[in-house]
Image (cartoon, rainbow, N blue to C red; front, side, top):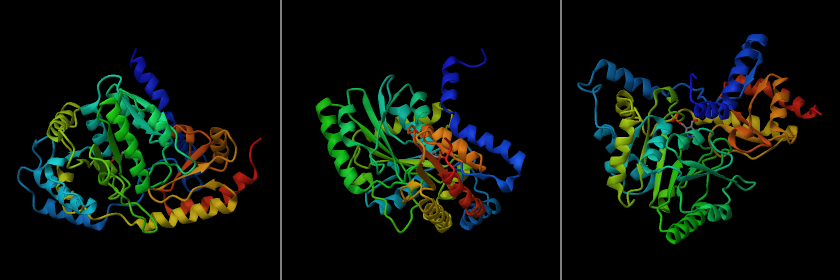
Length: 394
Ligand SMILES: Cc1ncc(COP(=O)(O)O)c(C=O)c1O
């Protein structure tokens, strides 16, 4: 027995994106890199902005004494202060450094928070389609994931939410702009949702947190604005990272901000510092913490993603696909033209197009296209998407 049965089960449930990625490597060997349209991974294609390399070089030329040592588990005070200042303006709330913890990406932030609030068998609510890793993050801390649907527009079903909140419910995870749908949740939705959560929370006499996972916050199109959950709910936490907006996914830098009026904030902050430590992260990467101090307003060139979104969206609509126009992030979540999404993505593969079935996000009957790819991949693939829908498998 090399691994636990539990781990075998988890790995079995996680295989879709990985499987497509591995099949892609095989296919590329067979037909050549330039003939495969690999839309399977959400890995940022752009390089980090110039300002990042400038700051990096400046630091290398002028080393900062003590920078690379152990530090407080919450992160550098100066970095927490800069983040607090930046988001005080962004959210129009008075955020202080005592609301901020630096983490190993958004993934680290969600894990640290869940570790700090979950007792065994507590429930965390997510909505389909959802970022597949949530299942494992919740399981890491012995929680139970409760999966609820969205409507046709990918807005969470609030009637189902109201019915599902029970004595074990401790958190709800929202993700906006959404992976895989590209949806940005509007303020009206937050208002209605918070009304329900407050009502149930009062009836049950339980605290229910809402985690707003927003690593794509800066990747929005057509000047669309992201509302903030902080305007509506004090038991909310904001999670983000620079994996996507600065294309630093491999550097693992992110953070979590507590609502400044969250009751018992200090207890939670201490628990998160401890979680960061005992999960083995200890602290977020020191060099990256230091560098982002001057990069909080920067981002990769969003227009390069918008170019690909427009090209793909228009071509898919013209070809007869059913897809909602994404408002942010870099994914399209497309209705499968046949009910069986796995069969359809296998059909797409015969045209050397690699995508991920909706079932990988808890919602079958759809497939996801990640357009975090080079332009030529999108441009060259369009006739093949058209052929694929014109020649549906029996
Ligand atoms: C919705 C969502 N949340 C969290 C993450 C994890 O981000 P990070 O790399 O910052 O840990 C991702 C990464 O793809 C994501 O899509």
